[in-house]
Image 1 (cartoon, rainbow over the protein chains, first blue to last red):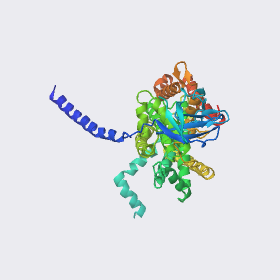
Image 2 (cartoon, chains in turn green, red):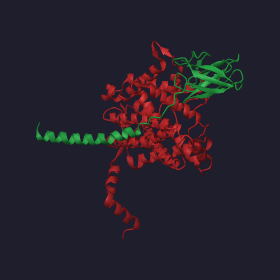
Image 3 (spheres, each protein chain N blue to C red):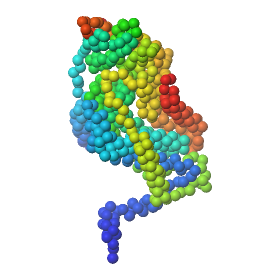
Image 4 (cartoon, rainbow over the protein chains, first blue to last red):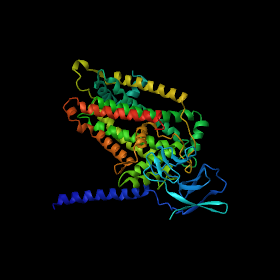
Length: 141
Length: 359
């Protein structure tokens, strides 16, 4: 290697090294720090008699929302409220007795299966248990 | 004996060589023909951007970028701060008009084939400016932290997450975590008021430099008799100003009769409100995602739609290099039809969003 090329390489490498040394902490800085996530397996979604038949409520299941439905027949059902299409929070449509996502008109039946619209997958269903006065919702294993 | 103002002029002219610049602008000519009307949209975009900067700086005085108080700070601006409603409405309305003006500017540039050599890079920088201003719109939409904005952001960032390989990483970076949380709003604010303006200044600088260096294009097929030249200063500049004043009047009317709404405060644990849709300039994509079947053959519909938008965007970016006829100063019927179909698609899908919301 000629002396000039060696000097060019050394200078170029030095500049590249300086840029990387500057960029590395900047990139690390703007990357969001890890947040401790509590893994929730079950939550108290409400109290019995809180929901009239054919109504629903949204509850907190860890960091995401869940939907608890008291059907017309008085059966309690729970699902994740995060639509499988593009993550909007679903609602319950009492008239058609279906779960509905207002963002892109996705519709699910009361088993969580897709009836119409763009959602690619069913809603994840949760177990519902009544413990004393409380409605306990847990992930299915 | 020199007057006071002449002395001032000479003082600055000696240091900044203003008369040289003035001489240059006197020499500069702009073509004028039957399509000249469309040229003014570039200047209108610049004017609306200046309004964005001024009103944005003013809003910073009272806006608080945190999930706990952002909505309340907007309420405060709208109800307590004198003329706060006006400043915010001007910011929001001019942002929407700006995106509209960019679309008009882009399609008029397309149909007049102003992208042909040597102006390919003017088109490319313009395309990136469109993306940047869409990003401005997307990040700014969340800042009031209201229900509509919350779910629009959730859908928008989920779309980012679908992008192969980098999607999930990019989504985490944008949201400041896996889901929209208290960390998201400051991030969007940072992108909206610092990152995007910085990039805009760089790209807009190149765009304007190219426009000034290369001059304005003359449409293909116009004879010399159909094109005359007018001085840039004062003729063209005054016409530009007239357009700016008309736009300012329009903004004033819109703000007084339709002040920008606040909406309801976002609740991450509430159902999405009925009739939810993004800002109008995203609705053609929104409706496509709504009506596309969940599966086409073995591919998920939403992924296919996004892939289609990506390919469409890439094609649009590369138009100056693909339209070989325009490079030879000839009009290409094929590119005209493609452009027309894209325009019709955007308009029809946008109208469908508003007139057939239950589709």
